[in-house]
Length: 262
Image (cartoon, rainbow, N blue to C red; front, side):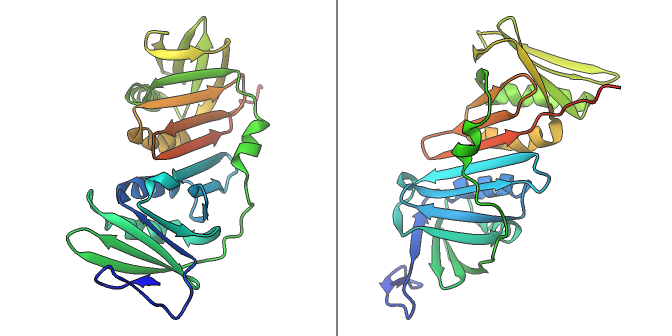
């Protein structure tokens, strides 16, 4: 069965393996924009829990994990599927969605058929590709990492602190010191923002780690999807950054920047 131009299911010469509908198309549009800044090709996985993407950037510095819950879809007919796509091509199509658009994704043979519905109906066809990348189990990877500190903070406040640091340097440190969470950048000049337990939920021991501001700024575009951001890190260990709401989860892992001593 496929959808015709009047949104009516009809017979197809090919068996359909996947047909899903997302009423809030902007949810996927925004996330694809963010992920496309880290990787160019991804495997989109469809299973009984929903839709997901897990990928490592080419420099092996960062990892992204994204999942939309099955409950976020108004229609979800699919077996387990892996769809390889060029994110730049997908991003350009999804940019044609408006704030009120709904989105239908249908797999037929080696094609991903994309239907955008709002005042008018638009149809696109995207050739699927073979993505030569490691199959990453995100939870398994994360289970081997050490996170001694956890900070839940307002997304807008964290964005502001990171933007302050970006004026002064190309990296910043996340520091836990005597119950305070500190975001600090030092070069010839410096920027420093302190958050007490009144401004953030801090469950942490004293520690610190330095991270690339270029990557942090890319990650924090996801902060606009959620009011709160969850940070997990440890002394000179990777950072985990989570954005979670009722419909989706977006997580990033970032390797620390380790300075070589002279």
